Image 1 (cartoon, helix red, strand yellow):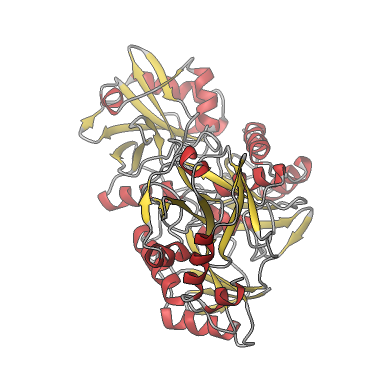
Image 2 (cartoon, chains in turn red, purple):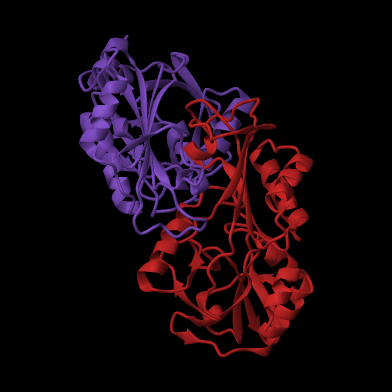
Length: 271
Length: 271
């Protein structure tokens, strides 16, 4: 792993032990696909980060500086994953956000993740997503629900898991958004009360002219096709959700082609 | 700040940048009152930590080793605060908990916090506590709700704030539990759906023979007396909640005397 850590505009050797990201998960992150040394969706990731920072009152580092440091980590021209985390920086003991916070930011470059099966088996997670409109949509660093849900998937040998909110509505997978096909139209759950507004989801919402809906477990199991998506893996076909099996569907292949037109890394992977 | 950081049983200079506490708030913490070089409630804090670790599937470091390192940080025989944080340690990118996690643990010694007013003015926080039984009661490191709520208190100049859950039930302050007096009996909200099961709360539940109840905002504003409590500050009298003013009440003084019998640091502060 190639990593650079900053406190404000100074590069540092390690994250300060009193960092509020460590203490309280008081921060945000982005996980970006690197393609031939470039981050094609950089602007979309930065926009989401900036929106989250406004909602949390979190100071952001200088955008051009972060972009330049990110480019330096990708100068090999290769493929992979770039993670950017921004925290509220050092703070005293106590929840009160410091008045003059200097953000800690961390850029790390990672290899592409291990390939998943061509078509995923999904577990219905028992761990629910709590309903919290103040944090919904953000890719913040309070992720214990996802850690618990992912542990469930490991325990049952599933590739991923679908999470429902406290009211039973289906929201997303643990680290991907969900799209379902009904009557030839794609739809994806709202992330206004919980869940993450994925960057890949946003691109596909437009490209597929998808609707944002409230989904029950029965709506998912009764769909004609289902896929997951995120900004690192693109579109992931789904073979099974609980006991419901899905055959390969031409609409998923069409969605892949639409995504391929939006991001060159996913073009290469189109079957 | 005097601090010691460990990866498993090795003392290290800094928290690894890939620590899951930093990435996801994947950890637990305890904040303990130090009195004359001792931590009188150590066992209660460790028990709560161990319960949280079981619920999260988090490995704990060796209890005797942690106790010894804590003692070394308190060898001056002084007063103050000791914080212990335990995270799931280093992990790859991704939510899945590693199979063989080696915990990161951090002990830090701090001075006693600044004195609060003798009687607090509390704000009704707009930020709600999401209902999440899987995490309720635990002192975990996903604390963005408290950070946002505490920011509200700062903005309005309140000493602390009361938080309601998504259903409107009153749960706690941002960093203290709540007790209310009705008809001569003390009660405190349930922390089965959200909130933290405070160590001081647990001691006072027994000492005051208090009931665990569901509380509305009207129940709090209509109480005969109200106090907050935590393991660092003991009992904090409340002068005002929103527009409702409270006069000093002999039952609060009696609760302080009960707490004084349970922890020597709070005996010294009894008026």
